[in-house]
Structures are given as structure tokens and as C-alpha cells.
Image (cartoon, rainbow, N blue to C red; front, side):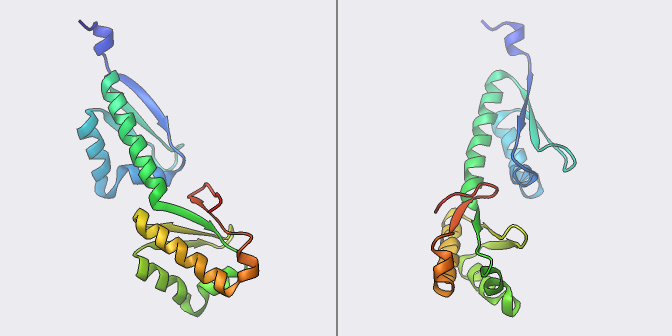
Length: 166
């Protein structure tokens, strides 16, 4: 038989990497957050944009475990659906000239959203895992055909905020 202390709700703060992850876990119109609460029976309080990114979970130890596993699975999915690519400096004009037609073409053919951080020279690709892979391949091919000597030695791909070798 469980004691009262074992049944008492606990609060577990979970730090998150950035505010985009918080938004991803909340989901469009709060759908993902409500699903997390429905599955785990925990209450979830997400940090505001002015706070350090985190989620505070409240529930029984069993409910907290379920919520942690749900969040871990969602974070793995987020990593597969959001990638960054380091770009060579000469890659910016190639992708952004002529009203960014090359970039728009890759987005349209792969059904992804690609944003460019001009200061960090990073292309951020978002979509389904399969489409993100296609977009990264198309960007790599486009840049290697137009900038072969520069691109072959500097291509890096990773999850947002985590660059790694492709």
C-alpha cells in the first residue's frame, strides 16, 4: 500500500534548450501541451519568452515519468524536423539573389521552411524529417555545384543550435 507521501504531487522543473523548443512543445494553439496533459495527467506550466526556457510539471511520480518520456520523444522528433546548415560566405548571394528564387524553389519542392541567419551564415530548415533531409540534400547539391571548392570542405549539418558533420 502506498503512503500519503508517495501519492502526493511533486513539481519537476525541466530546463529546455531555447524558446523555439518551448513553442514546439506547446504546439499550434496549445494542442501538444494539452496532449501532454491528457496522456500524463500532469499539469504543465511553460516558461514565458522573458524567462529561461523550461517546463514545470506537477503530478505523481508515475505521472511525472510519463510526462518526461513524452517530452523526450517530442524533443527527438524536434531534432529530426529542425536542422541547421553552415553556409559558405559566397553561398548567401547564391541563395538570396534574384529575390531568393533558388531558396524558394527548394522550399516549394521539399515542402519545408528555410530561414537564413545572415550573420551566423546558417540555413535553418524546418519540416517533416523526410522533407528536411531532401531540402538539406538539395541545398548541399546546389551549393556544391556552384561553389565546389569552398563547399566540399565546410559543409556542416545539425539540429538547430547544434552543428555537426553531415
